[in-house]
Image (tube, rainbow, N blue to C red; front, side):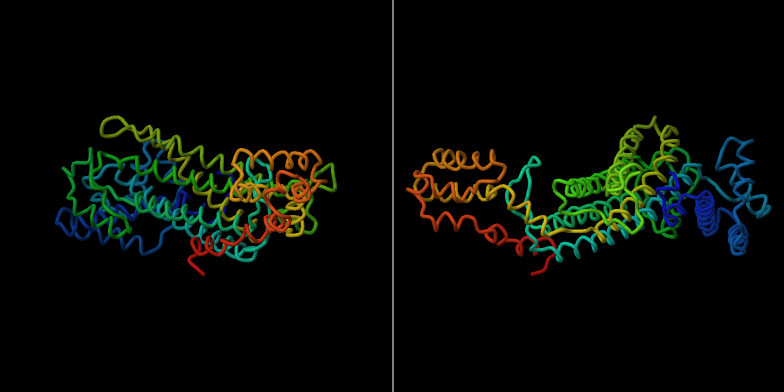
Length: 438
């Protein structure tokens, strides 16, 4: 994580002090449950919570100093707590193992991170919906292979993105539920030295579900799915960013990122207005996706436990969530302020002399009794003349002057096939499917 691409609320989840506070809550809730079971005295649980009620500062440097000697982070933390709580702290961690604390803490952190990411997605969806309805019937050219195809609307482009990010939200909700599990099962996950009721108690207090069967760690397929989901969301960010970057190219200039007063596009060329935000988003998406692979490689651990996954997760947990949080917020800002140029869209639609209507003429000829092969040949030979003239010629006029075409279709029938509104007649239907509105 680097500060340039980080926002405070998400970053705070991964701060050492926040982590240690979660560790304490796990240990204190477990001690509380053990006291109820009569395994440890009630005074032990009370001593922990009484100390916690004083809202003590977590002395991260002190814990780090202990770890420098113990070479074990959980032991260092327990030692520091014991130094502050006193004798009753010896009852902490009864029957538990380090992974119970580490894995349950990671589940809490990822759950909190997912909550912020879901809020980010809600904000993005709201912006996309607003722009979709704003340009619901703004005609523009649809492109396949980067080449003019047939008319669409800019609102449909926004609706497509809305539907995609709605799917992203559903996937993240499922991944969040899957990752939010608690494991307090002790060494190799058998509960030999700790009652399963302790796990259930801690899970309830932390808003998690119990892990049905752990080894000594929570199975990493859960984490793999979580980070893979973040990678898919990042890919959707890149798809929309790439679309905007293409639309901002000088030759198209149908939409562009907001360019603020005083902003500079180039150190050398004063005229430049570059799509820097969406280019940045493309790069950030690559980073988030890159964290999915090591998460998948973490699934295969040795026997009941090893720690090959640990160093990986110390990187990807913060970096993936912080980066994606920043990217979603940045994309929302891009969409919210996106400059849209309907006049340029119409100019580009008209640029190629009506070629975008070729399919309608093809179909009309087949309906008039011309074979599909001949119909394709007739339309294509006229379309190629328009193409080679760079749109200077009119496809409609060429078709009217083509004797073979005129033998099947009247001028009025040809003209009718060049109606732009025909292509937009089902926009309302698509919007109803996406937004559930008439």
